[in-house]
Image 1 (tube, helix red, strand yellow):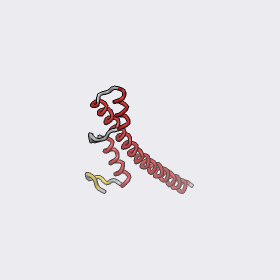
Image 2 (cartoon, rainbow, N blue to C red):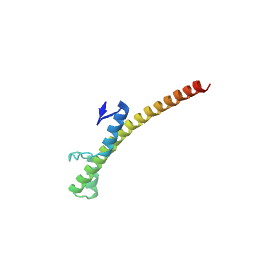
Image 3 (spheres, rainbow, N blue to C red):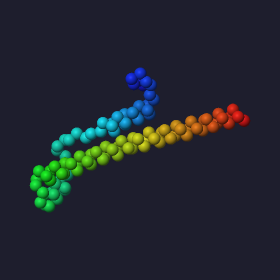
Image 4 (tube, rainbow, N blue to C red):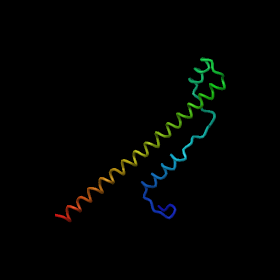
Length: 103
């Protein structure tokens, strides 16, 4: 696959996509997401409706961000596991070649 004149394999391309996603990470403010339990608890505690609504939406947005980051971290762990296997295979092959050459 060619990107900007350079050739990347699929794992490197996926790595690049994850890095760009993390670098430009933002969650759109939908304005509708609300945690009702938190909203009700804040109203009972004496907060105004506007402040309770804003706080509840903020917490909901953070929960979305945390979920998205967990998903991205799972992708990164999978790529790292693949790279570890690739490195181990490369080292084993290099040792076999060195053994064959020097024995």
